[in-house]
Amino acid sequence: HFTAATDGRGRDVVFVHGLAASPECWEEAGDRLGTGFRSHYIHMRGFAGLPPSGFRQPGNFLKPVADALAGYIRTLKAGPVAVVGHSMGGLVTLILARDHPDVVDRLIVVDVPAFFSVLINPFASASAMGHLAEHSRRNYFEKSVKALEEDLRRSSDKLVTDPEDAMRVLRWGLESDRATTADVMAEVMVTDLRPDMSRIQAPVDVIYAWDKSGHSTKVGLEQVYGSSYAGLSQGRRLRIDHARHYVMLDQPDIFYHSVRDWLAR
Image 1 (cartoon, rainbow, N blue to C red):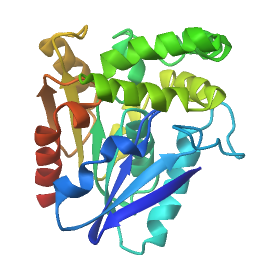
Image 2: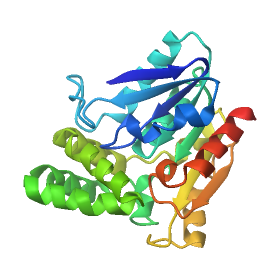
Image 3: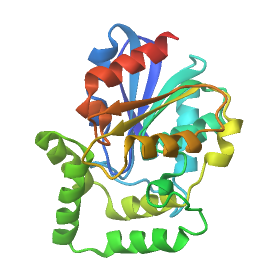
Image 4: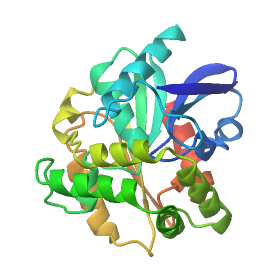
């Protein structure tokens, strides 16, 4: 389901990227964390140039990846480890912490509610989103190459501030397997993990971005994330301003300072 690359030596920290993205998004992690840490960069198959898995089943991606990730962490023989997941990767890591508490010491979820679709409709339910999810899947899969590139170019500009980073996000999307991306996008839209928050034993910090160019007010965003993660028993929530979805690229100083603080607790 994925490959893994590592750098550094010491305490293990696992980084999981998002939909149609690349572990390149964590490129500053090693230097920013400093000595004493071994970073693991997960690259999920089907994204950013890595061929899709032959084991992938449509509509069943998140849980199998989480299970495989648990197996990988167990091979480290390091006990429970710190895990960071961005966007769709954040949902994978929530499932990991829910179903495999023995491998997760602590978790950071970056810029995704426990039910993504509340960003589309605050009153959404998994069942109500089914039709839209299927429509989105088919629409993404059936677009012409030119139309898809134009759509990805527009969306990339909304996901990160720097134009060069936007071009990288565009490249990751174009190099991702279209069927995998479409299927996982639809699965994310109907995956509601809010009822499972009380089952997660590890402390979970939630980092989310706000930018004036976005559709949400600060108050509205606080309400979305507050209600989405209300069931957690441990952890903190942190809003990072003047950042878009790739908050680790837009505000690396604040983001990695927060990660170091989280690791030191």
